[in-house]
Picture 1 (cartoon, rainbow, N blue to C red):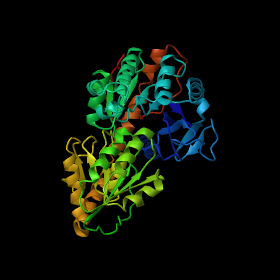
Picture 2: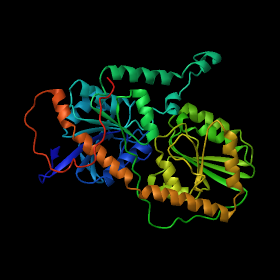
Picture 3: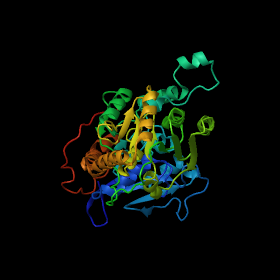
Picture 4: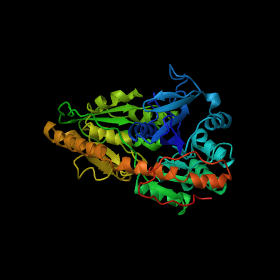
Length: 445
């Protein structure tokens, strides 16, 4: 471990991810790392290496100093301009930073995951232990997005795996054979994701379940306008790409009786997919109104969610789903697919988690919300808020994350043996590794 300014032992974590604060368009990974930085506390010290602009933006964040560490919340961040987001720029930034654990927040991000693993394998940067969080990228729904389009005859395309699936499987095989995952501990948000990681990366992969951390909800009571019977106001808040399945959500609306409104919030990640979605909602009957509001600042999300009757997200797969818990906390019942860890919503009177091969069940749930009067909807709203706040107040996730990084930092000796003799280590703090042990093993390759 490193030694802080006052001589105290600390665990220095260098986190790499595509976007960080003050950005807000990138969704879950950004919020997960932000919550870790703010909640984990001593002995952890977080530094975040990221891009200098938000998703889809042509200009950098105002007021930042590119290529220099600067305080952001309880951590520090270095913002890299596009010309420095490559092997040479990352190598320079990583070699100039002291850290005990390298934290990667994607499996398939070329600059922020693949490049650091390659540099580490080539010993161009320190060979420290790695925590890699694939963020649901190994979920079958995430692997399967991206079709053949017009490249192949329809009958043949329907029988073949999608091209992105083949590309990702090829990368997994090659990167494993090249030894990029030696000394890597895989972070899973749930037991289900842990099983997916082992299935794709091999049974010897070192996988630890440490759920995503969520922000503490505001202490004030949830205030909502009374629900009108015969009207349903649904909200979609996510990146617009095939994985989030907005087209499926739009196709449901025409089957609901009464007045239907859908507010769409989020950045367009796939313009072709967005064009398909627009064509779908422009063909809906007159009793359905769909409006696109664009990306939304994080500090506006809570108030927006309190203005809708139901949160609609028939996603193809989420490792956690921060936006789901945000909706629940605000008393907005969630209508989601069964491809997230959020299950048993109907039993908790907090919403519905339904299989995607039953679109009629989604329509029936929307119709039920539409038919609700103010009293019934208030009961479901209270159930959603209670579930969301129970999850937000649960300290188990925080404990498991702390144990994960303490244990990973304790494997520095393994990394030092791998890269050969070196000068004696600096003094360590005592008692930092007293957390319960977590299983470790060799990564694939």
